[in-house]
Image: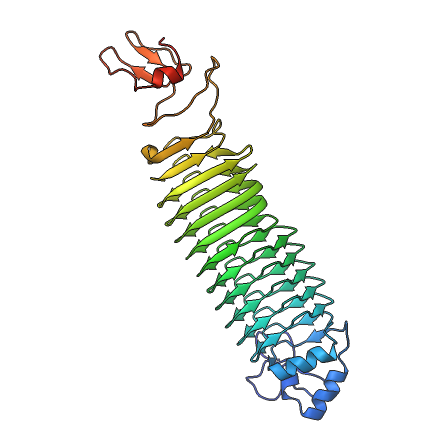
Length: 379
């Protein structure tokens, strides 16, 4: 048994890590044609498929899938290396599938495949394109620490028990458009080297501490969290009936956030480019405290509970159709810029005049134009 392997390895050479087939003591790729034919006879639909550590070329994979009639049972392919195109198109895996540490030298396609149990690609490496388009995973799917050097296609995939891509790396274009997540899709610490398209997605998603090296287009329902994430290009978010957590997010390019019946937290965000947040229906922002956004526009939002303390660029904030808290005397507050300090309860010092939102000393200037008509009478 080779070091770090929990299976008996091929006797063909010390460098071969393929699981040995008994009674030959060699892996499938090192059997004679007669021995391989005999070993394939032992494969049946629904039975366990064991390719751990085995080097599998395109011809061998075709033979293995034909022997299982495209319906293998529990499949163990940890540390396997697929040197040809790995086409698992519309294969129906009857049990759990493990491809931890597997290597795919060419195309890896699971287009339309069905996984009846869990599937794991932890630490897998994909040198070319990965296609999971239209696949169905009834269990949990895991791509933690996986690396995809080219495009990753997950469009219209069903992840019934959620997806984990923590610290995964997607060097090419990545798309999850139309995917459905029965439970959380977690991308904590993931890196996206090119454009990420995560549109028309149903379910909850988390991109905590993720790095978007290019543009990212995200949507979700229920909850979307991206605390501490960094976007070097455009960040486009569209959420519905969702709780959106963007605390400490940093965006170098344009930011566009569209809320529909949703709540957002923008505390300590750093939005270096033009940024807009638009609300449709009842949408709230709970905090802009400590935010640094020199060009931020808010449209149609309820800001009655929003915290503004420490806002770094108040002169760059523009408000349209936003509502604020009511004062103790029933006067509706509407901000004008430059920002005005609010004094709703504190008593005036002797010799001072006070308008709601503005304090003037005996020799001080009058309130800004329009302030009295917005905030009420002199006190």
